[in-house]
Image 1 (cartoon, rainbow, N blue to C red):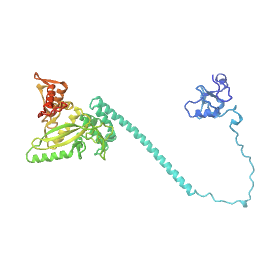
Image 2: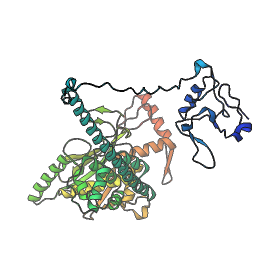
Image 3: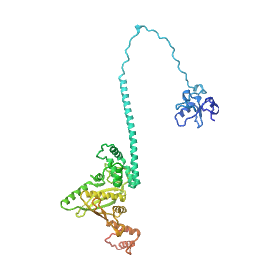
Image 4: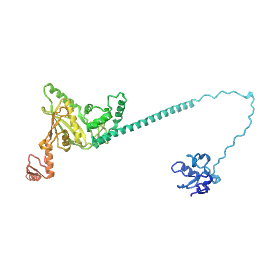
Length: 473
């Protein structure tokens, strides 16, 4: 067993414990460990795990003997009794002697003078007291503010937990894609306003008619990706989110930023009203197309442009960069005009999301008095998926359905695949596969290659251009 670590002390736990001597290990993490080491005054001393000090080196005030089972040291106990130290290392604990009681001399009454009480505080002291009072008052106010902020933080954490439950339900019911949920989580700035509305409504208090920009962005994002998901969130939050009719109004734009352009719809309404006055309808063909763009971010003195943007006013630099923009155009059937009515910056878009966008466009065109009779688009896989979701069937030749029911009137809107794009798809398929067989007739890509070689040798130019790399346009 180790002996006491103090200088000159030879007490050991196995021999001296019976003489009311207790042994105490050096503290591990408490700051008093260094004070214990300094108090022993031993050069280069580093106590081991089993190093101890006996109770003889502590004062009576440092020891707690209130327990029946064991003797403890108080938390602030520091060893200070070391009788074996040399004289020059011992601390002087001699106390000052009390003064000797001496009789006071008697003073004649004639020499006694009555003095006035001390004057009031000086101006400097009064000013310091005033500053101290003001400082204490500010400190009390600051503590009260800190308390309120901590309470607000706890309430906000509880509210965010409620939102996370809603997002997890969206994932569980597969109402939104994983990418859409990530974007929804980045625009959670309007959650606080949403939850305030919910609690005010639950307490039968008045709710503000207008919506904050953060809540507006929060509502537009899930509605764009999935109206079903938006209706689910609106139901979960006790209809504190705006109605879908209000969402449709918000999609309109006053400027040329992404989204459906309000100015274009106003022009269509004017033309539709003029045609109605003359007894004519305004039928149009709706066209949608995607154009690849270079990924680039640019500051336009208001915000950074170049991220995906569906007209929801979501300004987050964590969003992916846009690779394409999706545009919509209305082309007159009985006139000679066409008008772009909206565009969106995207980074790929599922068929479900495209379906929601097309339905919103058809509804807004119907509201301004324009009748959509057809939808023209290219044959990309996402567009084919969208058409299937809208009710178009082109997989079974014996049961072809080429129309989409209008979301409001129910009249058919006929879908057309762009002929030029479909020819390009056939060309690419022929080049990749090498040959196609249609009605037992073989179409071989080698014939196109041979025709290209003949053109290069003879200088022959056909009506269809065939470049040296084999691409037909």
